[in-house]
Length: 393
Image (cartoon, rainbow, N blue to C red; front, side):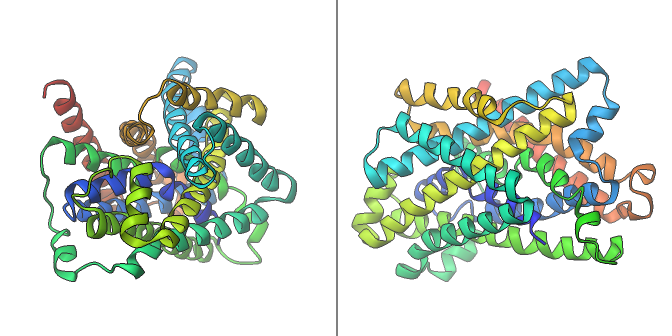
């Protein structure tokens, strides 16, 4: 166990924070069902990703690199890199906002510090191995959980309205935009690629005489525990916003949310929120960098130095911050971009894990393939509606 917890950090990144808090403060409990549905989807998707890597010893991006012709590989990498940049923007900007809230640092300086610390975190994995990185990431998850769950303890939600949020509904096109963002921020395309690479050597490193079937059973437990934790944290963000921030002015930005939390729930809860946001930005930026490097290596057989890659992917975040754009809005839009990239990772994953010539005796059961295809269908349909509303109105 362990790889799923690295993947889970990406599910509680600053983009999730912005999207879920915005959804709760603007629409109350309306989109609770979207968070729950997205998390169920994520459990299935991440298990299939881990399964592909463990059974075949080859990551999803490597499978695609072996099967696609050169031009297709380049085009595929271009869209995946675009998704990675959108991911980086959300995570670096989120870390910068947290440093601004905690230490009043300028946002561009906070972005540079966030990127630099993320590189140091990645060095732990390079020097001490993946298990050491897993322990560090689990520590960050514990910190994030403490900060994001504090608001629920101070101001618990009413059961009735919360249960009502499980009934599917929307409140206009803006709620649909946020629903797409929630799914994009939960079924993260770059982590679909990464998780499969994290398990490719698991059989050799930690087999200890266990069969593949036994290891897959442990992987299911790993995925469920990690993503249930991530799901609870995402849901807590929306519920706290719906319970304590609904209808209050200033909740359209994370800075405003921090101020409102201070006035409504106390300075202690606001401090924990800011610290958790910082932990979220640092940990998820590290995971995002590793995912981007894995996609490039698998599709193009290229390995770019971490410093160079980190510098290039930092530029869009700096441009957004220096241009004076609303950083919270940029976070939400970045999650919509992620949602558009999901089918490019999800459809090949479903196809490969359903092929007996790839998976052997561990090929997906028919029901699993149908469920995974259903997830892909829901995401693609939601993206189509989102694009229609965006460009046609």
